[in-house]
Image (cartoon, rainbow, N blue to C red; front, side, top):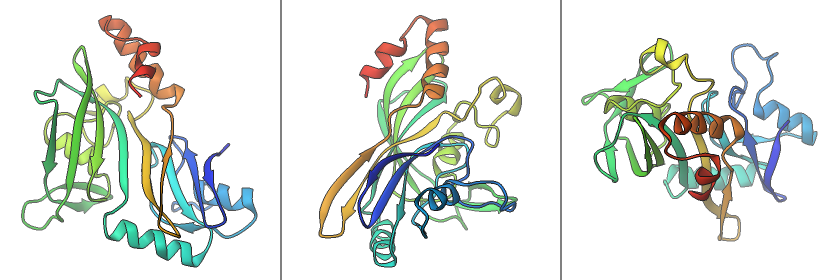
Length: 228
């Protein structure tokens, strides 16, 4: 079930499917990426970071306590570079930019913008393609707040397609998944070696973009693949 994208004696990166939690939720009987990976490898695996349950893409785990500490330090110092692909509602005016809005939790796991009590948060974006009334984006968060990308895009009136938590639920139910994918992560291996691990867009993501593109006669699956 889990595709391994990179593995050495210290670190393992896997391709997380949408709909599977990164780590155990309240009901521990439901498998998570973490539990499935531990079962697959037959050993303890250390959690480094998380992706939202609804999000697909590359996720890192450490295979030892020293590697866990090494990776955590990079995330804390914000030297890890994270790349996401998202499909958002509406057309962006600018081809690139940054969203700088502080985020805090408002209860029941919902996050939101709070200029006084929120934590500093930054998301850089670049437009890849405008498709009808939608925009395909590359997102690069400088910080790692919970639901950051989803909250930031929602806050500027461009919520992510299929996101039922942030936006109008009825419209979101028209789509089979949240259109957010962790496409690449760049970090340092022990020994100060740079590495980049990429996750290709899954069929479920391409299918939605292709359907929207076909309706707008803009871009098909083959053309979408060329963007990456």
